[in-house]
Amino acid sequence: MKELIKINKIKKENILQEINLSILENECVSIMGNSGVGKTTLLNILSGIEKPSEGSIIINGTNIVDLKEPKLTKFRSNEISYIYQDYKLIEYLTVEQNIKFIERNNKNKISEQKYKSLLNELGLVTKEKVIVAKLSGGQKQRVAIARALLGKSKIILADEPTGALDLINTKKVLDELIVNSKKMKKTLVIVTHSPQVGLETEKIVLMNNGKITEQIKTNEISINELEKKLLFENA
Image (cartoon, rainbow, N blue to C red; front, top):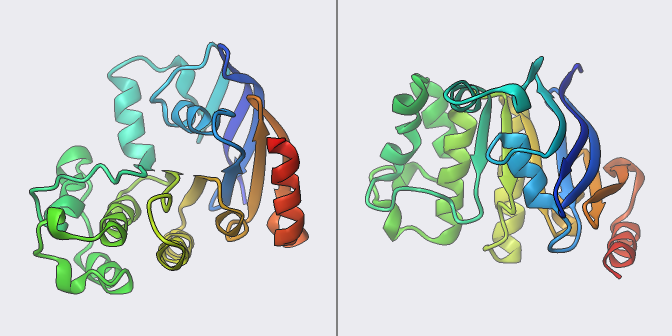
């Protein structure tokens, strides 16, 4: 796999301290650590929502730190999908309208076959014409996931995508996100507090006090070892 994202010496005043990180095409990565260590800030900088005070972020050959508006907005629309913990759906629209809204935003024509297939996999077929306000939290998160997966962007960033769900729904939703991102050849970066969530990805990036302290391949660590590392980082 080729390198898709390269973060070089990124700093953000009083939050991040010289972050270096490489993410491969189609790789699934989790960013972990205690609250306030800079995880969401790093994700926001990676998405272009926030600007670093120093450093560069090379995404598919483009340094997004150098991009000015409206080029940055256009680049983000084409290259990055963001899944928020609070879904960011339009409550008065139906499931179908929320998912297909991306067709207007970035001229992304969704394949009807992929759309129907994904709705089936995510258990949303019977909810297609239902207004989002009437859905459960887990169903809303699945709608947000479907919207991100069906977009034309190669990169999905997810900030605590299952943080508002119970343990059973967390496992189901996460499995659906990871399996389908692989199937659709997306690069997935997840911010999470959960060791169970982290171990579902391919690589864990541990953060503490605005720094990356360790990068771990998940096939080389047990949940007990990971929990101990997280306790040590959070001490």
